[in-house]
Length: 183
Ligand code: 5GP
Image 1 (tube, rainbow, N blue to C red):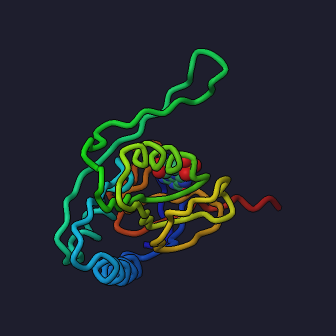
Image 2 (image 1 turned 60 degrees about the horizontal axis):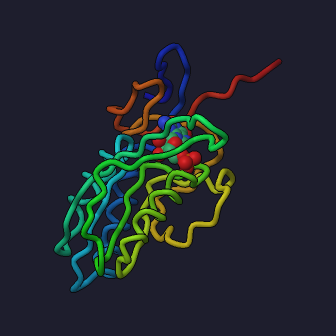
Image 3 (image 1 turned 180 degrees about the vertical axis):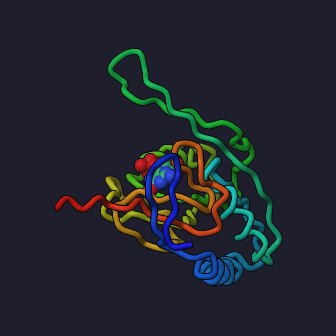
């Protein structure tokens, strides 16, 4: 299906599942090489990252541990603006090799916050593996960004774990919002 509608909004195909699977296998091979004889802790970021995390982990052969975190943001009462909170972060990351698995990095603010919290535990190493990256939207440099599936334009995408208004996470492929052409 090249075009779909979700909650009245039109989307068109951007990445087919087959492309995603091939790229995921290559990333997994790279991670296997980089982490040979180590036992990394993979930390998936919910909700969007659940499908990529599962597909990636099925291709990983090194011995590893797996966990998930969820980041919530709420508006602060004073001038703090958006305050974020992480749920489920393991407390025993000291001296561990951590790999954070994300669905998409947009501005990078969520990821920066997650990384700051992880570094507080003095892990041996921290890297990030993201399926999608919007380089033009990044507002902060993220040194840990080691494994990137696809760089995409600064547009809204849905499917393969990512939602639009809570819907579309179950789609096998990734779709982008159709831009409205003004005549
Ligand atoms: P950031 O903090 O990098 O700006 O945003 C990260 C989060 O915003 C992602 O984990 C994801 O939940 C959401 N997000 C950013 N861009 C998109 C997008 O194009 N589509 C969807 N569905 N979510 C997005």
